[in-house]
Every structure is written in structure tokens, then in C-alpha cells.
Length: 497
Image (cartoon, rainbow, N blue to C red; front, side, top):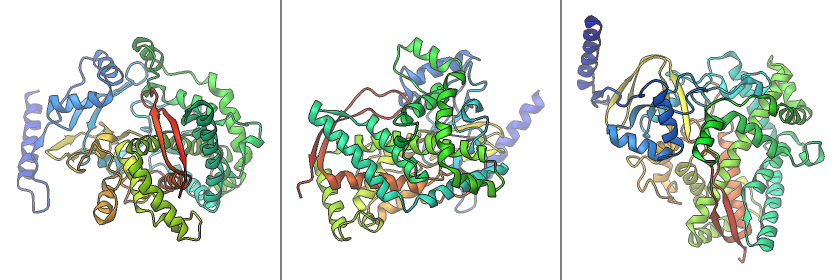
């Protein structure tokens, strides 16, 4: 026992010496042991879970640990813990310098870590481990990601006209409700517009003309709840909320009929994409389940959360920003023949910066995970930490993208932050897509296949918003933990110039 301890001390001392005499350009930061603890078995995980969700809540949960241990790399438990996750222990990376190791698939394994320390039943995805849960080293990863790329390429000529049609419908709904009631909830009609757009752009199928009708978003939301409930809070009394959502996994059978309804719609609509998958050696059934997941979980889920985030922050920014956006957007459209096109959007630097700033200040997906493939040294701004093979790494993305050592006024929404040459240089620190904004998605990494597609849609939304309105006002309703902000539109002033 003493020999083992002495050996560990010797290794620790040797690494410290090596780091202290690092060559020019290499780190000279001190090597430190990772602070923090997991508490007593079972009890520690429960205590951390309740602190994370209820008191003090997730941001304060991490801030208090950073202050306590004087480190942005710490050991802690992550929800859900017992009895859903057998091992809740993670090493939390809470700054913009340590966080990017989670993107390096040569160092971390991304197998079954999409939802963190637990994995939803494959009964919720037709019995298949879908693309999002595969590590790039797995044989099907590249093929399934290529199917998603094929779908994105196939839809490219439909994006602009279909988006305009679907979101004109959204704006008309909001206007009608504000006129009748003095206010309108943004989220439900936004979700309907998103689903209508995705199904028509990707598959050329309007759900309103099928058996699915307008039920798509509600079916998807129930399906998402069954997968994500261990990391959500619904705002119920704490004990009831914790017992219902975080103690046992929901059984799949109550949602099977709804999932079958969604599957039938996608199966009838996606034959051309299944043909492509078959050429790659995939079964049509597996391809269809993956197309459903990519559309409903990834694309719809991303829009469902991020569009309300954009409206929240732009709405809060007020009339001055709204006027600047309206002038920039309308001028660019006018100088491009009166059409909202890709060329016109490239002439809207403030609009582009606003979208990036919303992605930075409130990332739609706040958590990232990866399991160390080998022993690693991970750097924060202040120190180097040793991680052992097999340890689970967790990154809290808002702390990475609001790192005050990287971004000035990090906690403020700064609309023009990403404008100009200086702004362009900051894009390498924008980490919203499971990778830096300056890098490209490939079949060999886990960066979102629809990264550029999501940015395009977000820009289209802001451009259409200020092509139509001079300004708007919002209120925020009560949001549930882990979900989109509840945005209420209270006024819409139509374009006057």
C-alpha cells in the first residue's frame, strides 16, 4: 500500500517537474489535483441533484463550487444519479479553456454520452442506437452522418421559400392573437412553424395534408420528455418533481403509439433518403428511425429552444437595436433586387453578430459529455489537471461561452460583439455546436451535422422578423428548468419605412 502511494507521488512529482521546464510555447501552468468530492455513496449524488435543480439551482450550483474550491475544474456529481444513472461522478470543466477537450475525439469517447450519465432506452428510438449516441469510431457513424448531409443538400433549394411561407404563417398568428388578446405566447406557434418547415423542406411533405395533421409538435414534445425527463424540472413542488422525474426512468410503452404515428409519417415521406441509405449498406428501417431523430430531436429540438432564446434577448435589447437591424436588413434586401437571399444576408453583419451573440450568451444545449479514452492532462486558465482513462468529463457550456477571461462584458448581451475583424477572431470561442464555430462538421467528429443549417435558419428568422416589423415587445413567462424560455409577445409594430 505504501509502495503504491510512493509511486503515485513520484509520478506526480515527475509530471510537475516536466511541466515546470516546458519548452517555449508549451504550458508552464502548475499541475494540480482536481479538487472537489462526490460525498457519501448514494447520499452525495442525491444532495448534488437537489442542489442542482432546486436550491440554489444549476448556475449557482457551479458558481458555489468554483468559489469553494478556487478552481474551474472540479469533481462533482451530475443528475440524475440514483436510480437512473449507476455512476453520477464527473469532472466538471467550467471555463472556456478546458471545455474544448470535449470536442477532441482522439482524447474523449462520445459513445452513449448525449444525455450524460444515463442513456435513454432504445425502445424510444425503434430499438436502434441512433447517430447522436454513436462514437465516430463506430462503423455506422460515418454512414448515418452522410445520410443527414444528403438530406441537408437535397433540401437546400427549398429552404428560403418554404421558410418564408411557414414563418409568415407564424407572424400572422402572433399578430392575430396580440390584436385579440393584447398578447401572444410565442412558443407553441413557433414550434408548429418549425415542424411544418422541417417536414416540407426536408421531405416535401406538409403534415397538415396527412393523418398527422397539426399533432406533430405535441407528439414530439411528449417523446422528448420521455428521453430527457431525468435532466428536466417541470416546476412542480420539489419533492414531487424530484420523485417523478429524477428517480426512475419512464417506461417506453405509454409513448409507443405516438412514436409509431411519427414513424409512419416519416416512413411515408422519406423514401428517397432511405434509398440513399440503402446504397450505403444501411437498412431502410434504421435509416428512417435516424431521420426521425435528426429531424425531431436535433433540428426541431434546436429550433424549439433557440428561437425563443433569440426573441428573448433581442426583445430585451430594445428599440435602438431593433431600428438598427431594420435599417440594415431592409437596405441589404433593397440592394439585392428586393429579395431576401443568401447574398443579401451576407451584407447584414449586425444581424449575423446578433445571432452569434444569442448562441453565446444562452446556448440551447448547455451540457456536453465525453469519457476520457486515455490518461489526459487538461488545462484551465490557471492550472493543469490529470484525468484518468475512463473518467467522465462534463462541460457546462454557458460558463465556457461566458468566460470573462475570454469575453469582455461576458454576462451582457452585446449585439455587435462578433462584428468586424476583432469579432471574427472571437468565433473560435463560440462553442455552441459541439465544436468551435470556426471548424467544420465532418463524419470523423461529433460536431452537429446541421451546424451551418441552424445558423442559416436563425439568420433567416431575424431577417424576416425585421423585414416585417420595426420593433416588438416581450414579457417572459415562467420557464421550466432545461427547457426554452417562455416568451410572450405583447406588441408588434409593423414596418413603417
